[in-house]
Every structure is written in structure tokens, then in C-alpha cells.
Image (cartoon, rainbow, N blue to C red; front, side, top):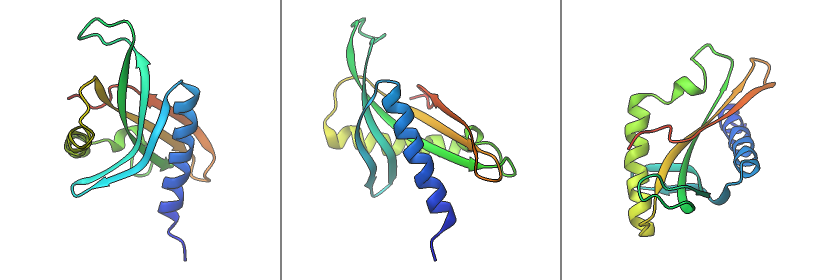
Length: 132
């Protein structure tokens, strides 16, 4: 028997990929794993680098997807708790180091909210969602 939560998560990730691509990001990987955790989506985006002042830099974007059906256990956006943020920073650091990335990077969240019947209510892309 299939795990309904896994199916919900897969649906959320597919919707997140679609939203990110529509926003102009290029998807590089999905479900990257290391000993400390997993990144749902790894992407790149051309955007200004506010630290160096470059008008156009390639950003590495590490994306956590949170999908919720109903609000009984909170919204998708609320699911990115301080504990989850700490874990994301740890996994992101592993990815950046493994890749040898020296450019700008950030952690975004895509919150996918559905009603209790599974109808899509919102897909929200939150840039720089997890502070470094």
C-alpha cells in the first residue's frame, strides 16, 4: 500500500518545480541526499548579488518544499520551524562544500497549501526564507 504522505510530498515537489521554472529558475537536482539530510530541490537563478554589487550573478538556490493538506497541523509555511531551519542550514553547508560552490547561495522555501480535500489553494515561493 502506498504511503499517502509520500504521494502528497511528491505532488508538492512537482508543483514546486513548476513554480520555480515559471519564475525563471533552472532545476539542477531533486532529492539530493547526504548523511545529515536531504535537499528537495537544487536550482540556479540569475539575479543581482547584493553583497558584491554584481548586476547579474548565478545564485545556487537550495529549496525546501513543505506541503500541507488542511491546517490541522499548521500551514505549509508554518512547517519551517527553527529546528527545521537549523537542519536545512546544515544540509546546505554540506551541499555547498561538496560542490565546491564559491558564488552566492541561499535557502528558499516553496509552501504548497491544499484544502482538506486535496484541492490546491496556493503555491508560495519564499526567497531567502532561511537566514544564513
